[in-house]
Length: 354
Image (tube, rainbow, N blue to C red; front, side, top):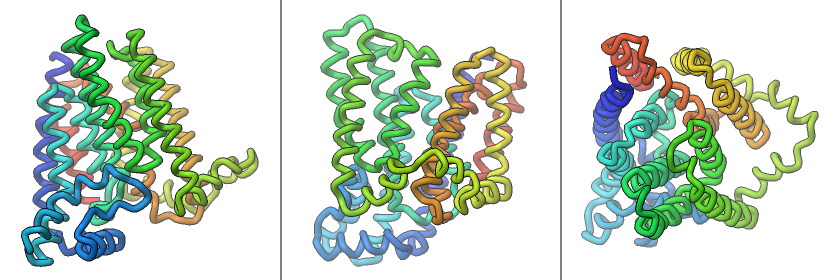
Protein backbone atom coordinates (compact mmCIF):
# COMPACT_ATOMS: atom_id res chain seq x y z
CA UNK A 1 0.00 0.00 0.00
CA UNK A 2 1.48 3.32 -1.05
CA UNK A 3 1.76 5.87 1.72
CA UNK A 4 0.22 8.74 -0.28
CA UNK A 5 -2.70 6.57 -1.39
CA UNK A 6 -3.93 6.23 2.19
CA UNK A 7 -3.66 9.93 2.93
CA UNK A 8 -5.28 10.83 -0.40
CA UNK A 9 -8.30 8.68 0.43
CA UNK A 10 -8.41 10.31 3.85
CA UNK A 11 -8.42 13.69 2.09
CA UNK A 12 -11.39 12.65 -0.05
CA UNK A 13 -13.30 11.64 3.07
CA UNK A 14 -12.32 14.98 4.59
CA UNK A 15 -13.85 16.94 1.69
CA UNK A 16 -17.09 15.03 2.23
CA UNK A 17 -16.94 15.97 5.92
CA UNK A 18 -16.57 19.64 5.02
CA UNK A 19 -19.64 19.26 2.81
CA UNK A 20 -21.61 17.93 5.79
CA UNK A 21 -20.43 20.83 7.94
CA UNK A 22 -21.53 23.25 5.21
CA UNK A 23 -24.98 21.65 5.21
CA UNK A 24 -25.05 21.92 9.00
CA UNK A 25 -24.26 25.63 8.80
CA UNK A 26 -27.39 26.05 6.67
CA UNK A 27 -29.64 23.95 8.88
CA UNK A 28 -28.49 25.48 12.17
CA UNK A 29 -28.10 29.07 11.01
CA UNK A 30 -30.25 30.47 13.83
CA UNK A 31 -28.33 28.64 16.54
CA UNK A 32 -25.05 29.88 15.07
CA UNK A 33 -25.96 33.46 14.23
CA UNK A 34 -27.89 34.36 17.41
CA UNK A 35 -25.12 33.14 19.72
CA UNK A 36 -22.75 35.52 21.60
CA UNK A 37 -20.11 37.15 19.33
CA UNK A 38 -21.84 36.21 16.09
CA UNK A 39 -24.97 38.21 16.89
CA UNK A 40 -22.90 41.28 17.81
CA UNK A 41 -20.73 41.10 14.67
CA UNK A 42 -23.78 40.61 12.45
CA UNK A 43 -25.54 43.57 14.06
CA UNK A 44 -22.46 45.77 13.71
CA UNK A 45 -22.00 44.71 10.09
CA UNK A 46 -25.60 45.59 9.24
CA UNK A 47 -25.47 48.86 11.22
CA UNK A 48 -22.26 50.16 9.64
CA UNK A 49 -22.74 48.52 6.23
CA UNK A 50 -19.04 47.66 6.37
CA UNK A 51 -16.65 45.01 7.67
CA UNK A 52 -16.70 44.49 11.42
CA UNK A 53 -13.18 43.42 12.38
CA UNK A 54 -12.31 44.04 16.04
CA UNK A 55 -8.70 43.85 17.31
CA UNK A 56 -7.32 44.02 13.75
CA UNK A 57 -8.11 40.34 13.14
CA UNK A 58 -8.23 40.90 9.40
CA UNK A 59 -8.39 37.25 8.36
CA UNK A 60 -11.93 37.12 9.73
CA UNK A 61 -13.05 39.48 6.98
CA UNK A 62 -13.36 36.65 4.47
CA UNK A 63 -16.46 35.37 6.27
CA UNK A 64 -18.17 38.77 5.94
CA UNK A 65 -18.00 39.09 2.17
CA UNK A 66 -21.27 37.26 1.43
CA UNK A 67 -23.40 39.00 4.08
CA UNK A 68 -22.01 42.37 2.97
CA UNK A 69 -22.91 41.57 -0.63
CA UNK A 70 -26.41 40.60 0.47
CA UNK A 71 -26.63 43.84 2.43
CA UNK A 72 -25.66 45.87 -0.66
CA UNK A 73 -28.43 44.05 -2.56
CA UNK A 74 -30.96 45.01 0.16
CA UNK A 75 -31.60 41.39 1.17
CA UNK A 76 -33.64 40.56 4.26
CA UNK A 77 -31.99 40.13 7.66
CA UNK A 78 -32.76 36.41 7.50
CA UNK A 79 -30.94 36.06 4.17
CA UNK A 80 -27.95 38.03 5.50
CA UNK A 81 -27.70 35.83 8.58
CA UNK A 82 -28.03 32.60 6.57
CA UNK A 83 -25.26 33.72 4.22
CA UNK A 84 -23.13 34.75 7.17
CA UNK A 85 -23.52 31.29 8.69
CA UNK A 86 -22.71 29.63 5.35
CA UNK A 87 -19.72 31.86 4.60
CA UNK A 88 -17.55 30.38 7.35
CA UNK A 89 -17.91 26.82 6.13
CA UNK A 90 -17.70 27.85 2.48
CA UNK A 91 -14.28 29.29 3.27
CA UNK A 92 -13.18 26.13 5.08
CA UNK A 93 -14.43 23.89 2.26
CA UNK A 94 -12.79 26.08 -0.39
CA UNK A 95 -9.49 26.02 1.48
CA UNK A 96 -9.62 22.24 1.84
CA UNK A 97 -10.41 21.85 -1.86
CA UNK A 98 -7.50 24.12 -2.84
CA UNK A 99 -5.15 22.07 -0.68
CA UNK A 100 -6.52 18.88 -2.24
CA UNK A 101 -5.92 20.20 -5.75
CA UNK A 102 -2.38 21.11 -4.71
CA UNK A 103 -1.95 17.50 -3.54
CA UNK A 104 -1.37 18.55 0.06
CA UNK A 105 -3.46 15.63 1.28
CA UNK A 106 -2.01 15.55 4.79
CA UNK A 107 -3.09 19.13 5.43
CA UNK A 108 -6.62 18.39 4.18
CA UNK A 109 -6.88 15.49 6.63
CA UNK A 110 -5.55 17.57 9.51
CA UNK A 111 -7.93 20.42 8.73
CA UNK A 112 -10.96 18.09 8.76
CA UNK A 113 -9.90 16.59 12.08
CA UNK A 114 -9.39 20.07 13.47
CA UNK A 115 -13.02 20.92 12.70
CA UNK A 116 -14.51 17.69 14.06
CA UNK A 117 -12.54 15.68 16.56
CA UNK A 118 -11.96 18.39 19.18
CA UNK A 119 -15.17 20.36 18.66
CA UNK A 120 -18.46 20.45 20.50
CA UNK A 121 -20.28 23.74 21.12
CA UNK A 122 -17.74 25.69 19.10
CA UNK A 123 -19.57 24.65 15.93
CA UNK A 124 -22.10 27.29 17.01
CA UNK A 125 -19.39 29.81 17.92
CA UNK A 126 -18.66 30.61 14.30
CA UNK A 127 -16.90 33.91 14.85
CA UNK A 128 -14.03 32.22 16.67
CA UNK A 129 -11.01 33.53 14.81
CA UNK A 130 -8.84 30.54 15.85
CA UNK A 131 -10.35 28.38 13.15
CA UNK A 132 -10.12 30.97 10.43
CA UNK A 133 -6.49 31.62 11.39
CA UNK A 134 -5.63 27.90 11.28
CA UNK A 135 -7.25 27.64 7.84
CA UNK A 136 -5.21 30.58 6.50
CA UNK A 137 -2.08 29.00 8.00
CA UNK A 138 -2.71 25.61 6.36
CA UNK A 139 -3.22 27.36 3.02
CA UNK A 140 0.03 29.23 3.65
CA UNK A 141 2.09 26.09 4.24
CA UNK A 142 0.28 24.09 1.56
CA UNK A 143 0.92 26.62 -1.21
CA UNK A 144 4.53 27.08 -0.11
CA UNK A 145 5.29 23.34 -0.23
CA UNK A 146 3.45 22.92 -3.53
CA UNK A 147 5.37 25.73 -5.22
CA UNK A 148 8.69 24.42 -3.95
CA UNK A 149 7.88 20.95 -5.22
CA UNK A 150 7.12 22.43 -8.64
CA UNK A 151 9.88 25.05 -8.91
CA UNK A 152 12.62 23.78 -6.60
CA UNK A 153 15.08 23.84 -9.50
CA UNK A 154 13.96 27.27 -10.69
CA UNK A 155 14.61 29.47 -7.65
CA UNK A 156 14.40 32.68 -9.69
CA UNK A 157 10.81 31.78 -10.41
CA UNK A 158 10.03 30.17 -7.05
CA UNK A 159 11.16 33.04 -4.78
CA UNK A 160 9.02 35.91 -6.15
CA UNK A 161 6.02 33.66 -6.77
CA UNK A 162 6.13 32.04 -3.32
CA UNK A 163 6.71 35.33 -1.50
CA UNK A 164 3.65 36.71 -3.27
CA UNK A 165 1.61 34.14 -1.31
CA UNK A 166 3.77 33.52 1.77
CA UNK A 167 3.95 37.07 3.15
CA UNK A 168 0.22 37.98 2.95
CA UNK A 169 -0.98 34.52 4.03
CA UNK A 170 1.40 34.41 7.00
CA UNK A 171 0.30 37.91 8.01
CA UNK A 172 -3.38 37.00 7.58
CA UNK A 173 -3.06 33.85 9.67
CA UNK A 174 -1.21 35.35 12.66
CA UNK A 175 -3.23 38.58 12.59
CA UNK A 176 -6.46 36.59 12.63
CA UNK A 177 -5.62 35.34 16.13
CA UNK A 178 -2.47 35.68 18.30
CA UNK A 179 -2.45 31.96 19.15
CA UNK A 180 -1.69 31.19 15.51
CA UNK A 181 1.82 32.55 16.05
CA UNK A 182 2.52 29.55 18.30
CA UNK A 183 1.09 27.09 15.78
CA UNK A 184 3.15 28.69 13.00
CA UNK A 185 6.37 28.17 14.96
CA UNK A 186 5.39 24.62 15.91
CA UNK A 187 4.56 23.58 12.35
CA UNK A 188 7.76 25.10 11.01
CA UNK A 189 9.81 23.09 13.50
CA UNK A 190 7.77 19.96 12.82
CA UNK A 191 8.41 20.13 9.09
CA UNK A 192 12.13 20.59 9.72
CA UNK A 193 12.28 17.50 11.95
CA UNK A 194 10.11 15.61 9.45
CA UNK A 195 12.64 16.62 6.77
CA UNK A 196 10.17 18.10 4.33
CA UNK A 197 12.16 19.15 1.21
CA UNK A 198 11.49 22.89 1.38
CA UNK A 199 12.21 23.19 5.10
CA UNK A 200 15.51 21.36 4.67
CA UNK A 201 16.65 23.77 1.96
CA UNK A 202 18.92 26.71 2.67
CA UNK A 203 16.36 29.20 1.41
CA UNK A 204 13.91 28.13 4.13
CA UNK A 205 15.97 30.11 6.67
CA UNK A 206 15.11 33.31 4.80
CA UNK A 207 11.40 32.47 4.82
CA UNK A 208 11.56 31.50 8.49
CA UNK A 209 13.05 34.88 9.36
CA UNK A 210 10.24 36.60 7.45
CA UNK A 211 7.69 34.55 9.37
CA UNK A 212 9.31 35.39 12.71
CA UNK A 213 9.40 39.08 11.79
CA UNK A 214 5.67 39.02 11.01
CA UNK A 215 4.98 37.25 14.31
CA UNK A 216 7.01 39.86 16.21
CA UNK A 217 5.11 42.72 14.55
CA UNK A 218 1.83 41.03 15.47
CA UNK A 219 3.00 40.47 19.04
CA UNK A 220 3.90 44.14 19.44
CA UNK A 221 0.55 45.16 17.93
CA UNK A 222 -1.27 42.84 20.33
CA UNK A 223 0.30 44.57 23.33
CA UNK A 224 -1.35 47.83 22.30
CA UNK A 225 -5.00 46.87 21.85
CA UNK A 226 -7.65 46.79 24.55
CA UNK A 227 -8.04 43.04 24.92
CA UNK A 228 -4.89 40.98 24.41
CA UNK A 229 -2.47 42.74 26.83
CA UNK A 230 -4.42 41.64 29.93
CA UNK A 231 -4.29 38.02 28.80
CA UNK A 232 -0.68 38.12 27.62
CA UNK A 233 0.53 39.62 30.91
CA UNK A 234 -0.70 36.53 32.78
CA UNK A 235 1.79 34.50 30.74
CA UNK A 236 4.74 36.87 30.55
CA UNK A 237 4.63 37.69 34.28
CA UNK A 238 4.18 34.12 35.49
CA UNK A 239 6.87 32.67 37.75
CA UNK A 240 7.96 29.05 38.11
CA UNK A 241 5.63 28.34 41.04
CA UNK A 242 2.63 29.62 39.11
CA UNK A 243 3.56 27.46 36.14
CA UNK A 244 3.49 24.40 38.40
CA UNK A 245 0.10 25.45 39.75
CA UNK A 246 -1.40 25.43 36.25
CA UNK A 247 -1.69 21.64 36.40
CA UNK A 248 -4.18 22.06 39.27
CA UNK A 249 -6.09 25.03 37.87
CA UNK A 250 -9.85 24.87 37.13
CA UNK A 251 -9.08 24.97 33.41
CA UNK A 252 -6.72 22.00 33.76
CA UNK A 253 -9.35 20.05 35.71
CA UNK A 254 -11.91 20.83 33.05
CA UNK A 255 -9.50 19.75 30.33
CA UNK A 256 -8.91 16.34 31.88
CA UNK A 257 -12.61 15.84 32.59
CA UNK A 258 -13.89 16.83 29.14
CA UNK A 259 -10.92 15.14 27.48
CA UNK A 260 -11.87 11.78 28.95
CA UNK A 261 -15.64 12.25 28.77
CA UNK A 262 -16.09 13.90 25.37
CA UNK A 263 -12.84 13.62 23.45
CA UNK A 264 -11.68 10.11 24.31
CA UNK A 265 -11.06 9.29 20.65
CA UNK A 266 -8.38 11.96 20.65
CA UNK A 267 -6.45 10.07 23.32
CA UNK A 268 -6.63 6.85 21.33
CA UNK A 269 -5.23 8.62 18.28
CA UNK A 270 -2.62 10.31 20.43
CA UNK A 271 -1.21 7.06 21.81
CA UNK A 272 -1.45 5.32 18.43
CA UNK A 273 0.53 8.18 16.91
CA UNK A 274 3.12 7.98 19.68
CA UNK A 275 3.40 4.25 19.05
CA UNK A 276 3.88 4.81 15.32
CA UNK A 277 6.70 7.30 15.93
CA UNK A 278 8.35 4.93 18.38
CA UNK A 279 8.07 2.10 15.85
CA UNK A 280 9.75 4.28 13.22
CA UNK A 281 12.38 5.35 15.80
CA UNK A 282 11.58 9.03 15.34
CA UNK A 283 12.30 9.85 18.95
CA UNK A 284 13.21 13.50 18.44
CA UNK A 285 9.99 14.18 16.55
CA UNK A 286 7.98 12.46 19.27
CA UNK A 287 9.68 14.49 21.98
CA UNK A 288 9.06 17.69 20.03
CA UNK A 289 5.32 17.02 19.72
CA UNK A 290 4.94 15.98 23.37
CA UNK A 291 6.91 18.99 24.62
CA UNK A 292 4.81 21.28 22.41
CA UNK A 293 1.58 19.82 23.81
CA UNK A 294 2.72 20.34 27.41
CA UNK A 295 3.99 23.84 26.66
CA UNK A 296 0.74 24.87 25.01
CA UNK A 297 -1.27 23.34 27.84
CA UNK A 298 0.65 25.44 30.38
CA UNK A 299 0.26 28.58 28.27
CA UNK A 300 -3.53 28.22 27.99
CA UNK A 301 -3.90 27.44 31.70
CA UNK A 302 -1.90 30.58 32.53
CA UNK A 303 -3.88 32.77 30.15
CA UNK A 304 -7.36 31.45 31.03
CA UNK A 305 -7.06 29.90 34.52
CA UNK A 306 -10.74 30.30 35.45
CA UNK A 307 -12.42 30.08 32.05
CA UNK A 308 -13.28 26.47 31.09
CA UNK A 309 -15.45 27.82 28.25
CA UNK A 310 -12.21 28.41 26.31
CA UNK A 311 -11.26 24.71 26.37
CA UNK A 312 -12.78 23.76 22.97
CA UNK A 313 -11.76 27.11 21.51
CA UNK A 314 -8.22 27.83 22.66
CA UNK A 315 -7.26 24.18 22.95
CA UNK A 316 -8.40 23.73 19.38
CA UNK A 317 -5.06 25.24 18.40
CA UNK A 318 -3.41 22.26 20.06
CA UNK A 319 -5.02 19.98 17.47
CA UNK A 320 -2.25 20.51 14.87
CA UNK A 321 0.17 19.15 17.52
CA UNK A 322 -1.87 16.05 18.26
CA UNK A 323 -3.06 15.47 14.71
CA UNK A 324 0.47 15.34 13.37
CA UNK A 325 0.72 12.05 15.20
CA UNK A 326 -2.30 10.76 13.28
CA UNK A 327 -0.49 11.21 9.99
CA UNK A 328 1.92 8.52 11.07
CA UNK A 329 -1.02 6.20 11.70
CA UNK A 330 -2.37 6.91 8.22
CA UNK A 331 1.08 6.16 6.76
CA UNK A 332 1.62 3.00 8.80
CA UNK A 333 2.02 0.24 6.20
CA UNK A 334 1.39 -2.66 8.60
CA UNK A 335 -2.29 -1.78 9.02
CA UNK A 336 -4.87 -3.18 6.64
CA UNK A 337 -6.11 -0.58 4.19
CA UNK A 338 -9.86 -0.96 4.79
CA UNK A 339 -9.36 -1.03 8.54
CA UNK A 340 -7.37 2.19 8.30
CA UNK A 341 -10.04 4.00 6.29
CA UNK A 342 -12.77 2.78 8.61
CA UNK A 343 -10.82 3.95 11.66
CA UNK A 344 -10.38 7.41 10.15
CA UNK A 345 -14.05 7.69 9.16
CA UNK A 346 -15.19 6.63 12.64
CA UNK A 347 -12.89 9.22 14.22
CA UNK A 348 -14.41 11.96 12.09
CA UNK A 349 -17.96 10.80 12.79
CA UNK A 350 -17.20 10.67 16.50
CA UNK A 351 -16.53 14.39 16.28
CA UNK A 352 -20.07 14.99 15.01
CA UNK A 353 -21.72 13.19 17.94
CA UNK A 354 -19.82 14.87 20.80
